[in-house]
Amino acid sequence: MSDSISLTIAPRRRDLGGFEVSRILPIAKKRNVGPFVFFDHIGPADFAPGKGIDVRPHPHIGLATVTYLFDGEILHKDSLGSVQHIRPGDVNWMVAGNGIVHSERTGAETRAAGHRLHGIQSWVALPKSAEETSPGFFHHPDTTLPEVERPGVRLKIIAGAAFGVKSPVKVHSETLYVHADLEASARLTLPADHTERAVYVVSGEIAIDGAPLKTMEMGVLTEGKDVAITCTQAASLMLLGGEPLDGPRTIWWNLVASDQALIDAAKSDWTAAPGQKWQGRFKLPPDEGEYIPLPEE
Image (cartoon, rainbow, N blue to C red; front, side, top):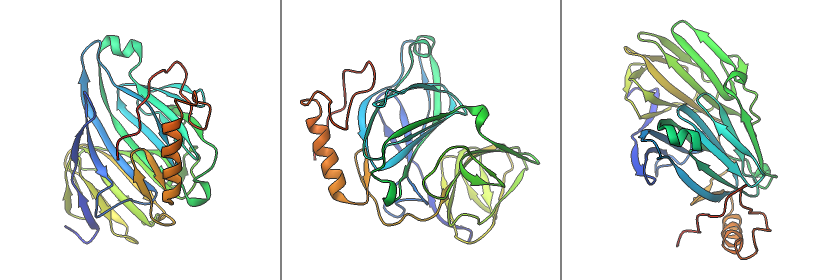
């Protein structure tokens, strides 16, 4: 390992019922990189005609979920009434704040045709000042996200600011989130503009200041140091990070908070929601009648 990489994180495979993800964050040694407290690599998974994903309605608090696809399509519905297809290159930025419910499914047309699903889902913890903000949902089509071209390199700025440009996605703290495609033999310098940074290899293999990083590995970078990313074959990367969190976060199921009391209150409200006919802060998305119950302790 070079002195530019402080930690290398290997994937852990998780079966989510019909498809697999590679879970990268969190781990015991690294709970977050900047505001990113959760990072899943979805697939690639191939679905035969008639098959797809069905993630039933479930609640979130204290975070923003970020879905970014390379292949396939997901139909998002949430308790604000949002109904939105997300396709490759788009960004769905869902701010849970003090409480939101959403489902993620394969749409009818895509399900009928059969498809490949491949992408990244991450959670960005909100700063304490925004943890209990009102929820919101923001869809940003592929064409609205800025791109930067370098020799042999294409950079899409998903959220935050990087390489001299800024994404239109509204963030609550300094954020680095970029999709980078590198041609064979390309070189990219990642400056130390953000305090905490990591590089995740979606495909291909790279070296960071000479230290190799393989497909589905994340390299957490040393703070305060520009690093050189090189590759001998084409590679697709996610660059992520930002300013350090303003204190530790607890993650319990789909709930994230700086205070255990906020999680306990959300658990109680989710348990009570069906009996209250979904009249509290947790409501069902449009045309949804089922939901995921609170897991047993």
